[in-house]
Length: 208
Image (cartoon, rainbow, N blue to C red):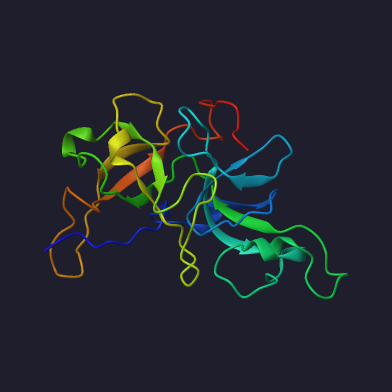
């Protein structure tokens, strides 16, 4: 009788491929599915800061491609560091790409963590930061089989301000594996929207 424990970052709801764009990747670092990313001054995309107040986020990664926008160098469901080095043959060099759900109005599903006081329905409209489970900001992790990033909503950071990475819109209407409804408490699933989106006027300096 508990909420399912399925951390997977910012999962786009009602996603339409026409609401996404392809960007070149800038850094040799793993990027997992549904990980928030930002675009820097060079026009390249990298992992976004998630704990810095008023940081800007472009959207969530929903797909990847390799040289000439073809398959990746390795058969992974995420963008592995090895994908960012020239594969064999050595002539097959070039950029790697990430498909980003970058519509400013995109809504995302995210799981709440178990730290601090659980969110309540009264917290709808407030903002909060994100947190990587079992990892620090500089070395985030993901599931190498599913490709999902191990990211959750940081309940301990919810506040009646606009500084958090995401804004809480509503409790998600869903059924758990045991037949119970998704409910307020540990691992609750919430619908959120990016607070400071890079494609709107609410922008700070890109943290990439």
